[in-house]
Length: 153
Image (cartoon, rainbow, N blue to C red):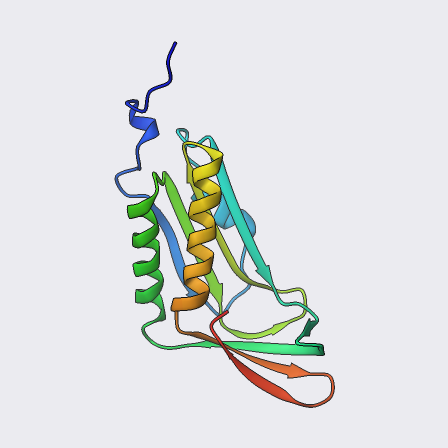
């Protein structure tokens, strides 16, 4: 039997954006994963960005994220672009703002699609575009007492 893409499950869902948020409370991988659950999805890709203990050769103690008031609208624009390019069944993205410690979750995104390849590609586009285009800034404080601002996540 030849494989065709005519089944409704092979198409993008009518309203695939399930969760978008920027919050000052701890993020949940489980919440994002549950948000992208879809019976027609054969592949779900999930990316978790955490605060690491180093950057540019220096030890990071803590960092803080802040965002422009347009950040949520930009996050929606990015999500809409991803669902327009891929057969997305469900998409979710949350980003943290405020003060974070090493190991804390900074961003969690997930995309489910009919097949794994599409899910990987759509998730990669979602996190890459979020990082480059959503106005979120990182203020890093290093062990040696220095600090720096970095654009986006």
